[in-house]
Image 1 (cartoon, rainbow, N blue to C red):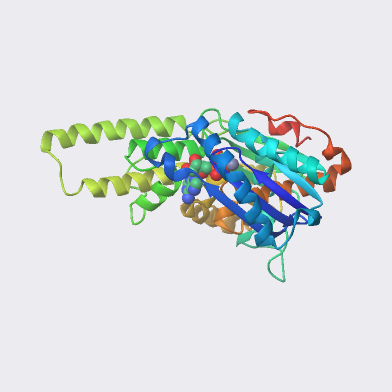
Image 2: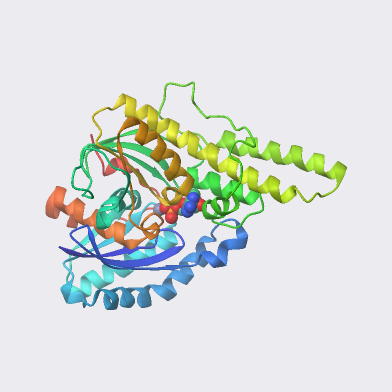
Length: 363
Ligand code: KG4
Ligand code: ZN
């Protein structure tokens, strides 16, 4: 089944062609990120206006790259939410129009289910690999998925694409949001994840102490607001000290070490939750890291260390472009929804700024 995917939930405009939820024939992404780099976030109306301008060229490019025309498409999958409403509407209105003109079935996809499907694209990439003689293969259920982006941080136990249980979620900021806000405090550009990762290169992860959130509580939830507050006080103390002695050459070193320690604190919290979940759910065959934060190299390293100790496979999306928002993951999710639920997924859907994933993944 060849699916055309469309994703416009935030500042990206993306169209992809994916065969059977796995083989990516094209995945074109146009981002307005550069426009928002100095603003520490996205301006919704501006993002939507830019998406209106680029959705048609992106669609054409995705078809050309896949060397197909609309008649070769079996169905269209589009992100129906959650996200910025104006941006979502650009994608869903376009999808409805081309589905109607070309008489193709249309599937509305939950954005986060897209992220959860991203580890199937091209088979994903195994950071650690256990119990699989013969090398790379497709994911095996049951598995744990840590889904961490700028809008959510969830830990799922999944029996299939549409069956599973939410084990924990963030009580305040999302992990990506913690990176974004931390970067803004450190004077680094948006999005914060990649800029903190870059600033942290060669930094000392132990230079500054951050708390390990919720460690003493019997929960698999996440919380990042305490880390943000710790960084704020740390910066205040450092700026007081430097205003009494004047700016020093070693101030750059401070930023590098603070970025490294802050990044490590976020990753340590994520790994701490996963370790606890593995102990509670010894049936799981794999751990998946998805969403924008799964692109983080330090997170991959520390999660790899944990899973080597535990003898569990860790899988991440095959390419960095499948970690952050992209249409290939939406096409994949559309395929798996159809595979598990049949033609019912072709029913009508509403475009909504907020929808819980529990409406799609049920126990
Ligand atoms: O999944 P995504 O592209 O969009 C949402 O659905 O939110 O995730 C974007 C988030 C941003 O907060 C960004 O700072 C974070 O993912 N991110 C990263 C990295 N790349 C993107 N965080 C840490 N390290 C990275 N390399
Ligand atoms: Zn996303």
